[in-house]
Length: 440
Ligand SMILES: Cc1ncc(COP(=O)(O)O)c(C=O)c1O
Image 1: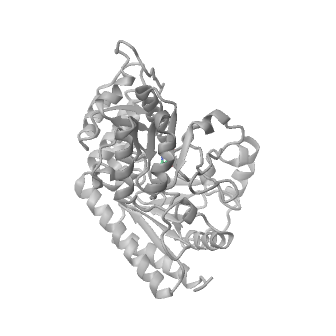
Image 2 (image 1 turned 90 degrees about the horizontal axis):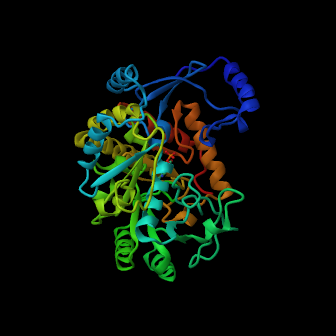
Image 3 (image 1 turned 135 degrees about the horizontal axis):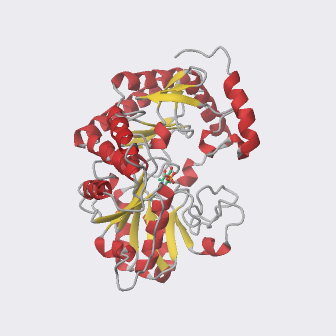
């Protein structure tokens, strides 16, 4: 990594940005002190900023760039498509080809509807569940992130003052002014606690359209859900006439057909996004034909009319299809093996240094926790002030060493990475652990 002699361009840009963008940013994720990194270009698994500093990118635009930056096959195909038009008020062959590919990746995917983001995919999935069941409520896991739809974001970030009793978690608004009616229609369950979750669901049985589940929720600890928990939820929804909606916006990358293929379950609907756009905005709702039928505009009674100006635009479709064709079963397995190597080496460094830290993850993602054991739910994952300050120090250290991580200290891999980049990451973590207290 080269070191910047000065960072005046970024400081100056941020000065200007604050006059026209609230807080100087267009997404809160990119905020950094004293100012954000301004990317100049990215190639493979590296980003060079406008100061000329090149860093290894383990964030990959929040787990969305499975092939890293400027993947040559995607650049070539998108450039050709751009010259032929980027969006039409007509259907295209590309959306049919891409839908066929995605449906072919998992037997639970019978039909799909393309949208433009993970947030929109979740919104459409939840509305489809309501349309299918005729019921108003949804249930979701405390602390799980599912994007910005009013209902999906309830209890995304509660704290010990607001989250309430563990047997009856509160439905906590994220945005000020969220309608009370939205809160009333969201039931919060604890992760990996089948007994408590089922008893909460039972209290709302006749009103629940679906249970929404991320099988490895990032903010809840990035640890795969227990098989018994997932099985209990599936059994409950079947018994009570509700649907199981999975959020695989991130976890789809963990297996060729998504993380759900590691469980003995059939979801009714699944929301996917991020990497399936090949670097461009996208989302999709996939699932059982009988449920997807609510979106059918040719039905006698259209239960859920839905449109979107940029849905299935040929740029996202072209980039997505190539990205997913390249992310075939051997590519998935290779990336997962690299992540396993990273996790076991980081764990070995933690043990050697004797620091109260641990690592969790699955597929091609991992998260380093400032806790001695991986948290099992959001309340355990919640950071104390002391843990937060250690986390910040470690993230600063990694940034100074030339690594871009997700700000929970999570890393996602991309296919241009090799063992060399993984070993660099581990060595940098080890130097970071050396600076940390062995007991707290
Ligand atoms: C699990 C999960 N669901 C949904 C979303 C929302 O996706 P998007 O940012 O594309 O709207 C995200 C984004 O980080 C996510 O991680």
